[in-house]
Length: 103
Image (cartoon, rainbow, N blue to C red; front, side, top):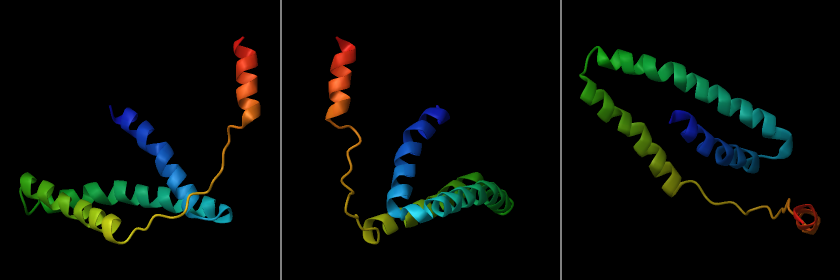
């Protein structure tokens, strides 16, 4: 089930990253994204383990809601929609070719 979720969220996330930076900075943006993801994958369990030493499991789960709530607040109040680039990769030649191949 995890792989299905990854497949559903990967393409839109990559599209958002690619559209949010200029083409010359896209490599750096993807690098930063991967680096932050790896740091979270390492630091998250370590922090949870440290917190488990002084609190019970239910408290740790409740504390994990705080970063999620902060992100939702940031998305609602601080992230603004940018203008969409109008590009169409499927043109009339594609449809003519599709009809030709299909018949």
